[in-house]
Image 1: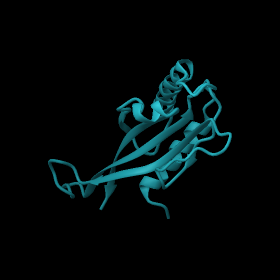
Image 2 (image 1 turned 30 degrees about the vertical axis):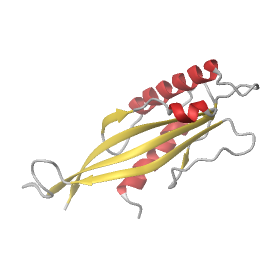
Image 3 (image 1 turned 180 degrees about the vertical axis):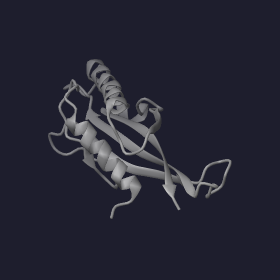
Length: 151
């Protein structure tokens, strides 16, 4: 039996791979490592990672009178792409298309159905300028799910 966090991460992978609304082609994959090294010839990679779990709500502690525990689960969607031009300079058009893809992923996730409601989606910073300076677009979309679990 998988943890609820892994189940949600797998649901995100399935939702992304089922969507046909993206301007760029990719196959999302589940990953337990956030480190990324581009493979030869790879231009775009989407990795979904179980990221965090918070148990108990801020006001009522771990258990409520209803015998449920409030749990927040965070799943990260990491998007990695080459954005350098042939001359080694940053390709502004490639950067813009990646920012557009991040927005498309966000909208697809809002449209998807999950086993727990989406409480928030964050994308801050929108991309890592340090990595962009070396020709790599790196952006992480964090999705927070909230679930009440029977105790």
